[in-house]
Length: 116
Image (cartoon, rainbow, N blue to C red; front, side):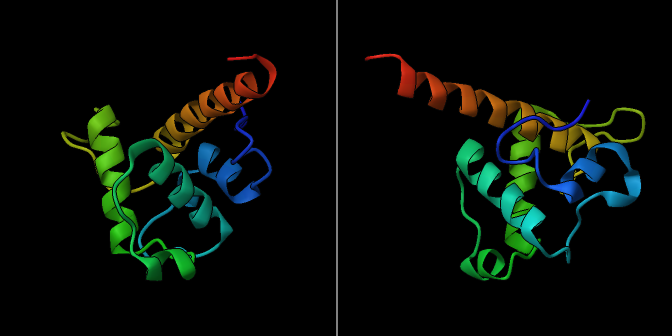
């Protein structure tokens, strides 16, 4: 199933992350796909990502730490070979981020349609 959130659906690099192990996002990755992950993690988990990581669209140490915090809190662990969360954005992580961002999309939509 492809990514469906407004944030991720149009990004081919993240679509590939959902289906190919070779497309995992790791420290040193750069690009718009990293900026989208940074935005999602900050929106969903809070925390801090250094401005240098953000301005360079770099999956640097503070981005990795924010992803690790996100995964740890949600227990995103591949139990086939892990006992604790790592800081890689792979299939399970991008799917979880997409599900949560889709809920954000729906919440934002309901605010624009339904009177409070």
